[in-house]
Length: 275
Length: 262
Image (cartoon, rainbow over all chains, first blue to last red; front, side):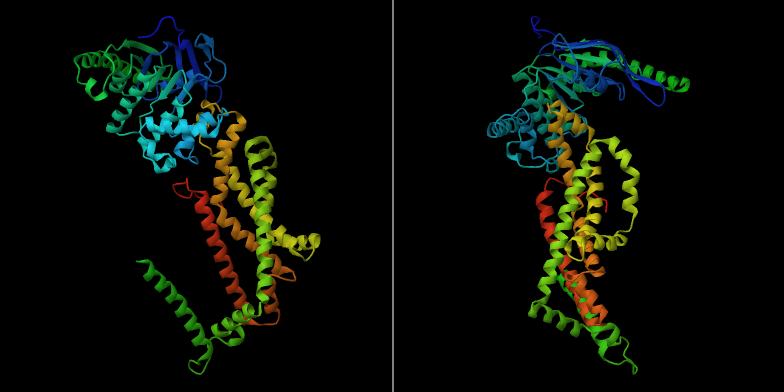
């Protein structure tokens, strides 16, 4: 449960994000999205592909500026990059010319930490994500799941107060996703950070999160639902899926999500005709 | 095919080609020698010429000069290419202004520059180095430019989110990417450094492998021309092997060597 004495970690207020496309046309990706993530809360955003979930995450990271509305991080308006956040990208984001341990240590290196100390802590983090023996491998020598583990360690070593994750386990196979989900929960349990987790997989969202937020399909995607997940913690991703409460919640959310996916689909074909 | 069998067949190609050459150049077929010695010499003469060069030691001076010219051309051309390529890629406006001129100079066949360089820099090594530099520079320049331009946006965003300043991004992201592209064009640029040196020597010099071949041609000493060509090939192969070793060491992080522009 979130501590009410703590300021809200991420607060989006009526945020609209628009891109200028060919000529004078403006493409509105996200429209008037309001969302808050409490300190220590795990929030998952679910929506159909291309609905602007990642856009919302980029706003929280400070990589994108909203066209209208505001974003506050710990009650402070965000200008520039969000220095309190760690970002785990969907695509491969490791530095291919650095070994696993150097990739993890880089966050400390650039802050000017002594090299020996940085390496020692990086080794510790690699061990926490189960890659203690792979410190000197280059990213291309690691499997997709191992690269995600290195990415997780790379982000967590900086001890960010907010963790932004953009379909981080998207490209992985089903078994690896479960293992990674459990690893994430285990690490998160030890030190509860505010998490904003984007996924298109509703089951994954329910299994991981405290709250599941649903977005409609783009363009002009909106937030159309917000469910609290009260499944007890600590959870095991594969076991929690067997519980009755999980199924009820899944059915409930899916009915809304499905409707909106269909509506969104009709909307997008219509808007394409109108231009 | 195992390594040994492969080596055997590779050797067989040389043996057959050389035997055929020797046979046709010395034994009359239907009362005619098909490869007249004046035009084609023969492997035995060429071989003895090579042995003579090495045993008397004359060749070393020429080899060293060509090597030295190639090294200088490579180093100067690479440093220039890396710096200018990096600068252009990070300053798109500068790149846009210079773009037509870069294309123009690059389109020019470098051989026509050789007489000008000889005029400016004399018959010594520097006119050959200059010719090599004009070749090496553009290869390295285009590769480094490409390398900086093609840095993945995700990797850049990741660097920013990890707290890198612009200077740290340059050092940890742009620079390694640019260098890796430069190294992947190493074979081409080293090769061109040698080409620049030898062509320069051929067109006017007092020493070097190109000079040796040119001198032999001047007195119709075909055996020496072929001998010079063989020594030059062996020289290039040795350098290329060295480059491969350096490359293996520098590009360990790479899954497969990416395509480079040559």
